[in-house]
Image (tube, rainbow over all chains, first blue to last red):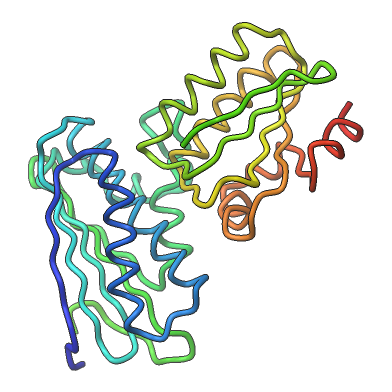
Amino acid sequence: MQLINHMSIEFSSLPANVAFSRVAVAAFASQLDFTLNELEDIKVSVSEAVSNAIIHGYGNAAGKMIRVKVKIYKNSLEILVEDSGKGIEDVQKALETEYSTDPERMGLGFTFMQSLMDKLEVDSAPGKGTRVIMIKNVHGSKSHRAGH
Amino acid sequence: MYINIEIFRGALLARPVGELDLASADSFRTALDNALDDNKVGHLIVNLSGISYIDSSGLGVLLGRYKRVASSGGRVSLVAARPQVRKILELSGLLRIMGEYNSEEEALSRAG
């Protein structure tokens, strides 16, 4: 698949940057023929991944860095949210619905990403940080495989 | 995010305005908890018409307040969520445990 455009942003692990990152990605994604609803879905998905990086990756510590990279292909969008935080011990368990280490949170971050995006991959290990890759296809187009 | 709170007919009416994400979750939670601390009510009504965005951080605050109110026999109603906000509420399953109404008046009269 031919890469048409790409961008990379890096920002500190502050809650205020969750909104910045979702708006930045949605603005970049609007180059493709997504509907407004799909752009809203992308915003939530990015917010969930970035929030996870802040809360879980960095334990709400400020001053750490989060990177968001977006690639635009002809009919799809690939988003990478990356942190160098503590990593996930059991990725499979983390992906299960309603699992959360915090009683006040719902553990729905990954569930939303899986529901709202077309593909979700999580690459993480203790001490190795976390990379969340999400793909959204333009409606009606063929599916996209990550890395292509 | 700012929030207007009113006590009316024995219910706590909360009207947040803005976005409910990680950045505003703490202040949203604190505002609701302070109001619930100061006012013993059996019904919390959250008017979401002023909310343009919500994700799991905002949902977590709603769920936490629901647990608090429900534990003392009260109920929580959600009012006038915009379509995208409603979609996220529905995906989360919160609409199965909280009442959903088109207006504050409807929530007050139907849920009592």
